[in-house]
Image (cartoon, rainbow, N blue to C red; front, side, top):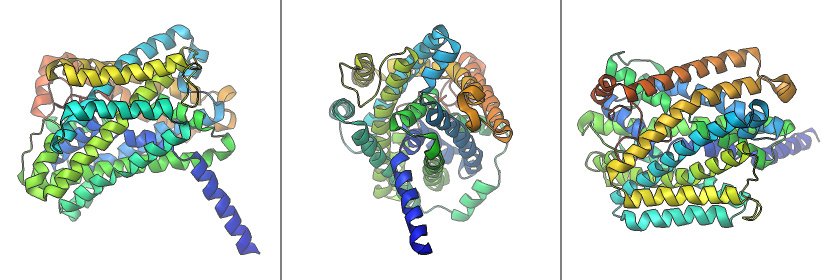
Length: 447
């Protein structure tokens, strides 16, 4: 009888977890988009295994920030933009949403650029792949329910296993990889510091916080079930950095050991893997890039539509019809159309200008978002018994201060020509430390 009762409780726990799983896994995995893959690739190509240790504190920071917004969504039943508007006024929210819209437009361009480059490695032409990709993500959200969309996104998370396979096919030195993970070995010279900033900078983007909280709310997660949702967040953060680990390992074992260490994009890394680790490793790497870019090209416009509509007090949600949430669907459609057309019609140099602008916008908005999050999550009238503990606040504020400092450093490096040259010396693109793109190393989905 006791055994039967224990099994029943276990079965109930599993069913509850499956009912709330999704937002944490999806949001964290989108973090490994075309720009993130480029950053991890160049870390492995230039520095070998020596920077793997940075993934440990990076994972902790990601868990802290993601857990906080997921908890706020479950407790308040409101999205982050909605809470900021209610607590800090319409004007501040309007400005915040305007900057976020600019940033995510550039981010979306970067994702379609990554899709085009990954497809080129697979011998597919951008003029075919980009329109098909744009049509797919548009139809998915416009015609699918929230449950269907979430299931497709969760399936896309599974395909990141391509990077694990690439890592094993590269035949790395696992002993050196273990040492690089658990023993900080990087010299604190200029190049290493710039690369560490780049790796940390790929962790937290403003859109992630808005999207995760909105997704938790739309999922209908209740405070009583939040313990299960927390595991969704934690597992998602761990998985995304495990993928990052294998990308770095694959490039460290091949490009750093005997290949070209200067790569201009994640697609360059995929092509370079062929002669060193075999055609299968290169194709898997390129397939992973296409999957990640298409996945992110779906989420970023969706995250933007959620945030802007919540911030302006307008209806939003995949389960609502077009006439019920016209602004939501118009924004989603507009971002996809503009992002895809930009990659198809504009020359690469013009695309980079837009992507660089989006990264600057990310840099401006991130400190405000983090401070708003921390203040809101400590409000007893909003969070009650679920507000941050003292220990959690120490970790959260430390993470916040570090991220703000890195963001300010990013903005300075973008503005200062001398520092821009240092970025080039570090193997990064001009003036952008971690402006990673799926095309030339300038991105937009990170801040």
